Image 1: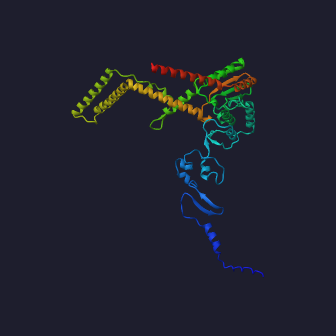
Image 2: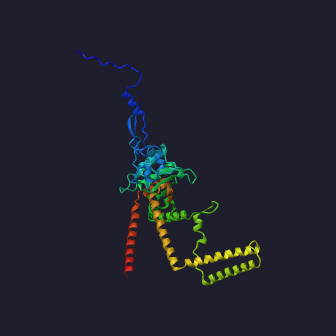
Image 3: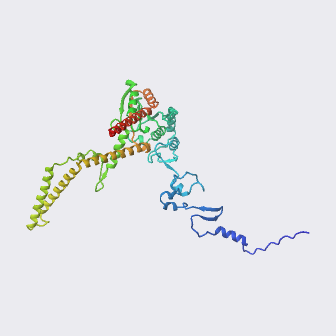
Length: 434
């Protein structure tokens, strides 16, 4: 017995019920708008979270990047399940540079690629190296070796030939910018030999890449190394002697920024002019006789104006207007004398000293933070320049400076400061007890 084949249904031009149901499921979009919407598509269900699309731009705070306030968003690659499009667009997965860069980011900057951290390079300065500059940079890194074995050193010695006369030319030189960034990452001093056609080269040392609060001992040690070459060093110049220590210079810089003011009309008054102005001297307290004389002058002029108005004069008369102007000046002078007397009291003097002390502590902490956390291109250079008689002397001097361990000099000073603070605190405790 044979089974007969199932007769095929004739084509009527209408899809079957199952096929119609599937096509309706693919094309139908559910109207619900909750936190999670499931939409049937070509590749199955797709979840839309609250950060999809451009809705992230209208959120504030930690909720904007869907972090929940628990930390930074982890970096991911392209594609679903890694990072959303809004995150890649706004670069929220990137971390901003705080302090020294990594050697990997320096290599990326030298090749013109994107760095892992933001703020490593200066936006308007070039860092990408061509073939000639890269060969010179590789030679400089090879001279530095692996450093001193304690995480410091290894910056090497860079050799450049400068023929530009502009003072801003070094800032536009990619090789100088990249190697200074590399020395900052390696915790080493920036040492460069500027070659001249006559052979009398200059050795330039920048100590800003060390990021120390005090570098006087380091500068003295570098000068001692240069003195060992005798007459072969024609000139030795310390360009940081007038600036003082890095921490002191940074404190002055922050104070100058806070002292800048803008007067009406948009004219800016520089802080250096304000701080050096003779009008900023502390006012001396007035004597009782001066206060009494000022009050008497104000009362007499006020009585004179009152008698003039009783005689029929008005405020539009020239005599009354001149008298009123003089009266306002006398009142202003009287108020200044009263303020000076109030500020000269022991309570006011003590309060002012305490405010100045707290302000100095705040500015000092801010200066320490900027020295440690600002990118190197935002820190001022601290140069020492040596003019050598010949090229072999310049190379020997640069090598000696680059191979000198300078951080122990600073660590010894910090240890002495800690001991002095302990002694001072003990003396203060004993004084209070007595």
